[in-house]
Image 1 (tube, rainbow, N blue to C red):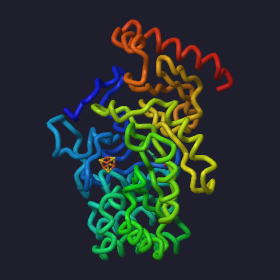
Image 2: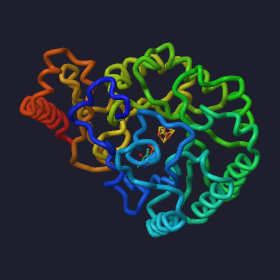
Image 3: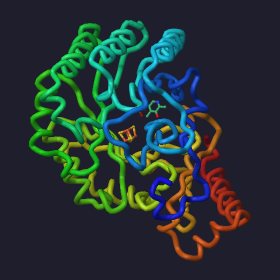
Image 4: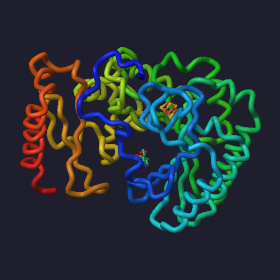
Length: 343
Ligand SMILES: *Cc1c(COP(=O)(O)O)cnc(C)c1O
Ligand code: SF4
């Protein structure tokens, strides 16, 4: 069961970000006003234990019942029809699954179809591939040409296409990576990075500073660092929120401001990504952080929970009792409400 080295937090559930709750068509999540997430496929070149989409991605890897988002043109057409019908959608994240696993013809079809929708101004193709298999950029010209074609078509339309990738550690960027990213840079393809903060992997200031600087050297913009999502069986990899805040303090100021990532927390329950610092209330003893997301779901509070292993023994014991849980959560919500009366 997903390598559960430490017990899951009691407030954790599959599809922790409520992506399915925000899905008007299968595999399309429309949570924010002007942007949508399109899950084109459900396979990746690697499977990350901490994957947010473990409810869907890698349906071939576990016995848990998952939602299948295989490449399916009828499903794609339904998603494109929805995007066409909603003029407020300007920005599409094509994810999954992983754009590395899309054929060149599929990259072009998705790119052209979306860019031809007048109100769609931006597309990002998400792939971890650059971080774990940069050789493909140097050995699969058809795939690189397809991305280049879409990028150039977008530019001719004064629209924007980028690749969003996923480096977590400076050691992932090798000389082959540098060559691959150099190739994309020469073609004018913008690449941004979304890292995940992981205990024992990159949860110290020096490693994160090195990651950010090295990304800068290979022309990848360090866009986000995520507090690890609350998914099953990854408690050993999660850090508490205060660790994220502490590391951010060191990273900011260590290099160009435009190459400095925003540390975010993707709120369980569908509040979207928030600057990790922007909580209404954070109790470091109980490990409960309360956020508001007025532009996503106004008037609601969203909770993020530090992993139990980062809390004191007394508090860990309190989390075992449902009544104590409610007391701790009610306290946090009341404090948040008292502090954010202007919302
Ligand atoms: C992350 C995400 C986006 C894109 O958000 P940005 O903050 O602009 O990167 C859009 N839709 C969903 C559902 C997302 O999870
Ligand atoms: S590459 Fe991304 S989508 Fe695929 S398993 Fe890892 S985190 Fe999930």
